[in-house]
Image 1 (spheres, rainbow, N blue to C red):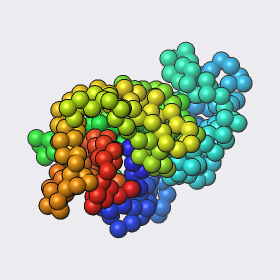
Image 2: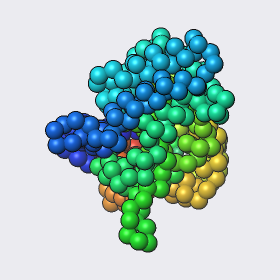
Image 3: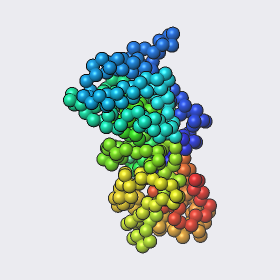
Image 4: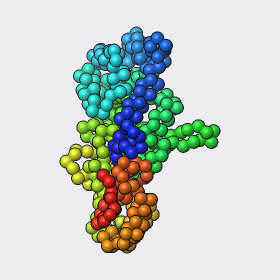
Length: 345
Ligand SMILES: [Zn+2]
């Protein structure tokens, strides 16, 4: 619900420096080198080089000659010097440009259609070159998301569910969140290990709603590029407060940003269910009962109100991802006339 850069803002000295470090960690993990700087046998560079030889020698993925030519061109494009590193380090703003290059070479169906062996080119690349599965189960993954302050956070997309890193009984660390591939890895295997294509999210967002739907930086707010909270606001609907309990809300975009996240992740519907729970009901009821204090309260009453709000949500926007439902709670607070209570955007 907020930009990941903002999530780091008041937690580390240099958010962009931390992100650069994490990109380096990922690149060094996937492309291990020998002392002389040449790539190790299990590095992505070596694997890609082997893949090309195997594919060309077998030549059996397609009976279609034109398709095979396009697939070979795509592999040559991947194999270009520096290309894999460019892909892994690609910034969100570069994704569409890269995809335009790919689309000029190969059709999407050439990447995703399964051949007689039941495998697509994408399946083969993911199984032997872009090994996201290995990275996901490696300590490097945990170390990166600890650096990014996701050891205790909430889903970047919905802010409904808590996500984090937990210790298992054998004292190992384990993440209890999903990584959504903003550009699906089945359609864009070249982005399977791209740092900025990885969005830490809850299972509900990633598996129930996003699934294999594709997001693009032209149509969906990218959490490393833009900020959901800066565009959207929750509003309790007039007449929907019953004894202080919110019975209905809307989630509306307030800027002219084009975005499909709200609909694709069914956010308004999901929040309409969430407000029925005690977490939001008790919060809104507490504020409603003290609504006059916002404008007429004595300093000590205002202070008490402020402390309660701080204990339930965050005054600083930068902390929205730290606690689940913070964005909704902040927007509920904003509906009151606030005196001496700064909500920092
Ligand atoms: Zn979520």
